[in-house]
Amino acid sequence: MTIQLLAAALLTTLLAQTATAAGPISSPSSSRDANLVERGKYLVKISGCNDCHTPGYMPADGQVPQRLWLTGSAVGFQGAWGTTYPSNLRLSMNALSEAEWLVRARQPMRPPMPWFNLQGMTDRDLLAIYRFVRSLGPAGEPTPVAAAPGEPVDTPYFEFMPKNLPAPAHQARR
Ligand code: HEC
Image (tube, rainbow, N blue to C red):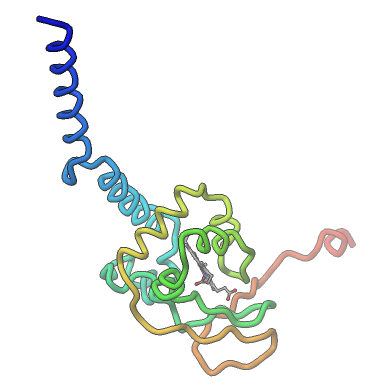
């Protein structure tokens, strides 16, 4: 074989490989995206987002159809911070870009939202949650606006107040 023939054969092989790698079905980036959505679903499920943000999830032992997941709850949580409602993430996350979500997810929020757990997630895990929620599409209604401390509300609510606490140490010693 001449040098020219060898070079031509090499080029043909290289071109064929490039064409395969760029094909839509075997595209590594689309399977990575699918993996990210799956991981988001897993994270939402095991990190408890549904427990508060999906209506009826806890009483139904988690047996709520996925199409209703994260549509928010109109049952408030009342405590020293006022009354807050687990927001409709299907609406709020659909209104944010990925970059905006990464900022929002790391901001402090009122109780009982465990915002410090979101803050501890990696960018990749937060993006996975975002991609999963976006894949479900927007659904449901906005939840009631939070009420200030002491402000009466006419929605149902849980009272988040520890009862029967032990006396502080200095009192117990007397
Ligand atoms: C113990 C109940 C509870 C759990 C568990 C919970 N949240 Fe929340 N979440 C709330 C409440 C209540 C609010 C409203 C807080 C406020 O008004 O400041 C909220 C607010 C939010 C907000 C800000 C409002 C918005 O829509 O942008 C985001 C984002 C959020 N939660 C995401 C999540 C994610 C993701 C998870 C799972 C990792 C989760 N939450 C788990 C109760 C909860």
